Length: 254
Image 1 (cartoon, rainbow, N blue to C red):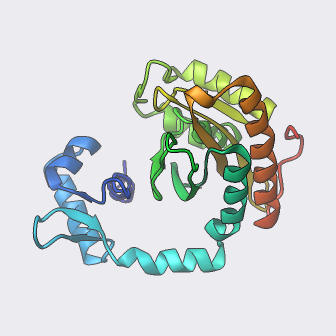
Image 2: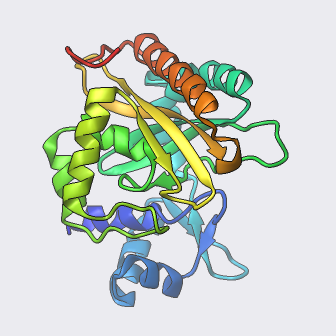
């Protein structure tokens, strides 16, 4: 793995739920030795991409990312485009709706509209979703080029629950089914009591850019609710493609 890849791997461990992390913690989770992690963090510190809390010496995302974030949102405002679609989805389904974007081999959550139910699925902005263990990841994996699947194949695939698919052959089968259906359904893949349905949105070249999904507690994931969520998510993803100037690939399921 190249140095830049390793640096971005470290950044992926930060989220709203875990805004700070220590050197040993990052080394343990990444599988890199402490010396490598320390060297990467020093480089990120120099560019302001991370900073160190002066009190506890733990690391957090730094101000250096703000300029890039503003530039990205100004030139390709996906979160702003998706926000009203997510609000409508959450209102229609009564469940949490979220928008992801693919960056390299990582799928990040860039907008969330939570359900009004007290018992609801909660998500963090910036949360990285595993490609093999979520509906959002599966639709992106299904419609992306072969390089993304090969990247996933080369890595250890964590089994988050007893329902997580980790075998490459089964993932290929699910990806083929997802391409045929135009959406993915995950029941307890990432969290035992959480189910989700996702559909992809595309850029102007017909390449998958990310996904729109609805996640619900398994207790409310009845067949009737699934059908309602599927149609609503498909419409929202098609709208996201259109509003962001994209086009669905030829032959995609309607």
